[in-house]
Image 1 (cartoon, rainbow, N blue to C red):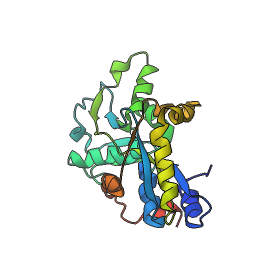
Image 2 (image 1 turned 180 degrees about the vertical axis):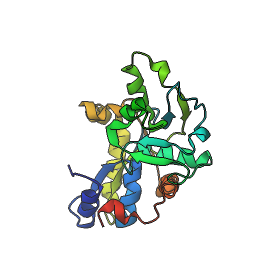
Image 3 (image 1 turned 90 degrees about the horizontal axis):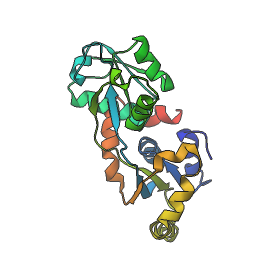
Image 4 (image 1 turned 60 degrees about the vertical axis):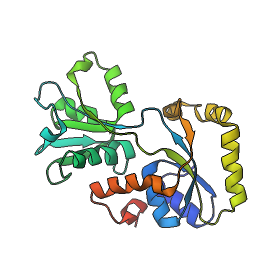
Length: 226
C-alpha cells in the first residue's frame, strides 16, 4: 500500500512496484509521469458525478448556479471534482470564473445545509448515501447526473514484460468472480459491487484529460508533489 499518487508514481519510476491499482484521475497523472499503461479495468456500477441543490433556493438547472459557490470533495477526485467541473463546462459555465468551486472533502453536504454554497458536486453514490441518511430527502433535489465515468484500473509500469501483463490479464479474465469477491472484503471497496471487467487503452482516458483542462490543469506536476 502507498499513501497517494505521488508515492505510486515514484514507486513505478524506481521499479519498486510493477502494478498499481488506481482510479482514472490518478491514472492520467501517473501515466504522464511514468508511461505506465492499462492492464485491465473495473467498470463500477453507476460510476457518475451528480450535482444537487436544496429545494428552497430556486435553482432548477445547473446553468442557474452562475455567480454562486459550489462545493466539491477532493482536488483531483474523478467523481467528486473533475466530473462535476466538466458538467459545469458542458453547461456553459467556467469553473473559477463564473462560479466559485470549494473543494472541502466530506464537508460538502454540511456546507449546503448551512447555506454556504448553492449546490454540491459529488459522486452519485455519495449523493445516494447522503439521501439515505436524510429524514426528508426531497429537500435535496438532483440538478443533473453526468455520464458514466472511465473505469478504475490496474496499470503496469513502463517496461514490464508482456508475459507478466498477459498473465495478470488472463488471470482476471478467467477468475474474475473469485477475485472480485476478494476485492469486496471490507467497507472501503464496497463501491466495486457489481463491477464489470473491461478492456481499456490509454485513449479511453482522454475524457479525464478533458476534465483536467476543465479545471485549468495542463501540467500535472502539481498533482505529483513537484
